[in-house]
Image 1 (cartoon, one colour):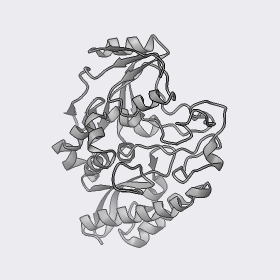
Image 2 (tube, one colour):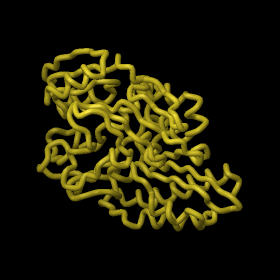
Image 3 (cartoon, one colour):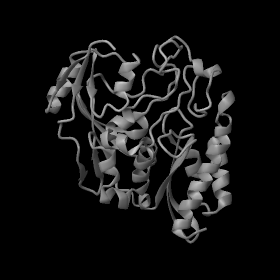
Length: 331
């Protein structure tokens, strides 16, 4: 690992100014994956700016009923926050399923959204990877791609986004708050994650030195009846093969509100808008759920070893929808 200089700051402006002035520098928060990437030479900044002392670790109520998660709030603390558990249970479930207890005690919610992909070719500096080294190719296209994406792919990249939290936030239309050299801005969560297209190395619309200061959860009553279901090869510390975040309300046996997103199967946390349109106003029955799941996965493109993910995602969607419908007392 190349020598890396280190400084610790306690002021947001100082942190942004220090990193934005140096193109070869980076913020350091929990560091639960960043340090690993340094050790294997995937990322090689010469300066790390530790931001753990910044006052961005609280969970706050906002006017109008929204809830703000501070960018530096630890995953374990947020998952136990009573107001979040009551109003947004699928967010708490996604956090608890997102990592081991040790990692949740260190990792921040902003860091979780900013984490890099777990594709083995991205992490192997001897392999071709357009995300790590643009223009070199994508080894996963014809390689070992069992865990890779079937939605939102391009011929430049098929790596899945690893965040569980991001899936729940996308379902809820969360808003990412940032501050950078050009000032503050609010980014809708679905715009915060970029599809690979021809530029897979660009995963977020952030400028260098722009810092995620918080994530706002809108006041969304339907979120109170929600779940996050994650299917993986093993129960402990494993990334999703398929996951579903669903919030649903019903009246007289019909769906009156629906929020749905998928994880583990796409190059970004995937809002299931086709399925939502079909389910809105439909009977809350298994038949409706199956039709919506089939429609959402119809555009999926398999790559050899990951073809099973299409059927797995369909079944996981139906299971998640049935689970929430049972809580609503409609199935």
